[in-house]
Amino acid sequence: MNSKSRVALLTNFLPVYRVPLLECLAENVRELRVFLSVRMEGNRDWPVFWGRLNVVVNRSITIPRRFRNVHGYTDQTYTHIPYDTLPQLWSYRPDVIVSNELGARTLMARIYKILRPSTKLIIWATLSERTEESRGGVRKILRRLLLRGADAVYVNGASGSRYIRSMGYDGPISVAPYAADNSVFLDPGTRQRCGALRLLYTGQLVERKGLYSFLRHLARWCKVHPARSVVLSVVGSGDQLDLLKQIELPPNLQVDFKGSMRFEQLPSQYHGADLYVYPTLADEWGLVVNEAMIAGLPVLGSRYSQAVDELVQDGINGWLFTPTSEQDTYDAVGRALESNAETLDAMSRRAIETVAGITQQTVAGRMSETICQVFGG
Image (cartoon, rainbow, N blue to C red; front, side, top):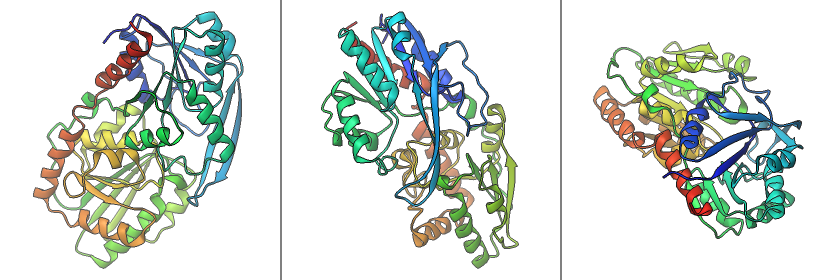
């Protein structure tokens, strides 16, 4: 559905994987301008790439901080205060503002809406109940106030929707999950299963991702089952790399640390694996789950990823576990690693079917439909 509206998107930075989605959205509205707080955050080793998008980088104050949350892990976060947002919006005069997250950007968008009441505000709340459990009382009060001024809200999935409703919001909610470039990652049908079982992890090597604890459980299982040879390929970088390398491994488990890779190098990593592991302790979504499934990989995934919670069915297209439970994690590892080639092939087909319809075009269509509804044309 096409909208005749002029749209301003306020967000922190643009990851490469989101550019095609926003290019699709730009085709569905009269004009889209993206306002970024920073070119790229300091804990990302991604290239700066904006494609065909019309992008403006705001003047911002960035406050980095590390904090230990209620789930027991330490995380690196950045608070951006783009202090020239109001004059930028005043100059652009958008019909609709889409503001990512519930912080300073959305506060400024809310102020702009008060000054120009005809402007519509959609809050893009990329969050889950799990990721928001550490938020303090003051922040919750601010979020409730911001949501009162929203004409609609985008969320990733059911968990995000429940969280937004818990903040007292009773307006329209549109589900806009993360979507991979399915054509790039689609299973080419050349996978051969023989010898060692090939596992894959892609992402940051940080405490929140849960890989250290998972690898210890994997090593313990392999030690008890010496007849099963396993290779885990780890693509990514982070401050836990040295710690991960110190884990004692049994002879039948090999871990290949491949370092960071460019986006175009990733599909071959998925196509060369048998199953994907995602042991995160908290994630608003987890786009790697989409990428793995369209590539034909059953997912051994944490229930604390909203993507896993939404997409993975235990024993059908993957295996679920609670990463904070040692026994549950160990048992799920066993169920996955004891699967034979026929079982993995069947799960692979079901994984592809699960995410085949979640494309950047369909998600952009949902987003533009909501824009049409709030703008009225």
